[in-house]
Structures are given as C-alpha cells and as structure tokens.
Image 1 (cartoon, rainbow, N blue to C red):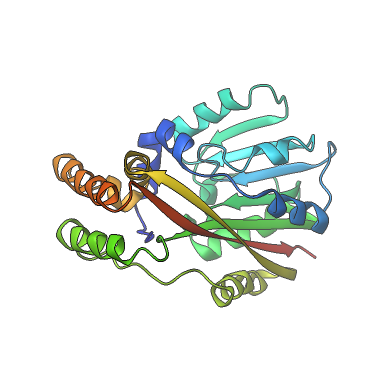
Image 2: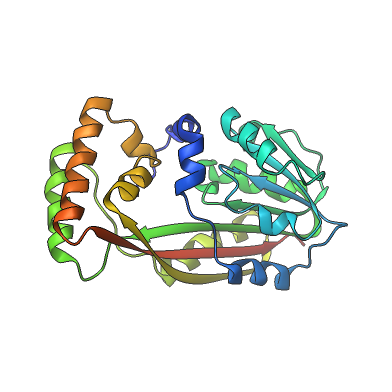
Length: 260
C-alpha cells in the first residue's frame, strides 16, 4: 500500500481494528535479531511506533524492559493494557522525533512497519544517539502483494480502484534490491555491520476480513465514509465472485545495524 506522509494520525482512529487485523512477524525474524545481538533481563529496548503491539511480545519475553514511543494515544493506552503483565513495559505518547530520551541508554531500538513515518535524518540520528555503543537498531516491515495467479480478481480490483482511488498505483513485489537499498541508508548516519534479510509468508482472508484489513490503511481510511462503504462493498462482491477468498503474499524485510 502506498505511504502518504501526513496520514500517520489516521491509524489511531481505528486502534482496536488495527490491533486485530494487522499481522505480527515470523519467529525467524526475532531469532535473527537475537543472534545478531543478545537481549535479556538486563537489556533496555525502545520500540518506535508500537501500534497494536504486533511486534512487542517476543521482545518482552526475553525479560528486557521495553519503552514504546507511540504517536497515537489510543494505541498507547491499548498497549499499556495489553502488556500490563510485564512490569518492564511502558508507553510514551509522542512522535519519535519529539521524544526526549537520554542519550546512550538503550541496547536495542526497533521499529516494525512504522519507521517510514519518521523523517529519515531525524529518525536515524535520534536512534544513533539513544543507543549505547554496540547497541543495535532493528527496522523491519511487512510488504503485502496481491494474490498471485488470480488475474480475473486482479482485473476486477483495478476497475474498482479506477473509480474510487484512481491515483493509487500498486508497485511491484518487494525484493532483495529494495531491501538492500533501504538497509544501506543506516551507513549514512554512522551505523556499521549492516545486514538485511527477507522472509515470506501468505495470509488468506474472506471478503469481509479483507475489507476490514483495508480499513486499517491510511489512504483507504481518509475516503469519505459513504464512498468508502460503496468501495468496500464492491471489493467484497469481487472477492465473493471469484472464489470467496483472497490470499496476500507478504515479504518482510529486516535491517540490522550497529552503533560503533
């Protein structure tokens, strides 16, 4: 889905739906993070843009403390309740670029499908400042791609989008070149030992589940409500007309970078 700067506020308006519909991340991703840099009960981690907490539990289960910096007050409150059993968890409602954390205090700073909302220079420089020497930045994101081998359904979607979102163009499937290019950004800001990896999975939805997911994407959320209802109704009808289910092909990219 396209990223439209200035719409980051939209997600907090559907916090419960977002928490339910947005996916978590594959176990192999966390295994790679922990192999790159060990995390335990003595560690301090900071999460940028916790959202519904899709990426948080595996970090908390290591025993480390986690401070979440989250722009949305509804998300912050949701996650305070969600992770109340973990005394080391706290949430600060703030844009990350406005967060006033103490320099050199975190072993791990990570962000899951959220760091693209932070201005690049401000974001990387603040991450670098907050990390201890030897500390690690882990940025990862999910990139869904359309149902493969379903050209009739894809053509039906194109016709619907031409009416309701005529300027939305789907890009190609996320690939290794894109992952490397994004990971290499960290080198501009002093990070070293930069690595990246891709992971793949599929998710299958009924027609109504799929429009519930679309309802958590910022560019779909800002469509006028009556128009959006008609839009989603046509999407559901297309899915039902062509088999009743839709499968998304996800590519998850992980970037790891170390502060010297």
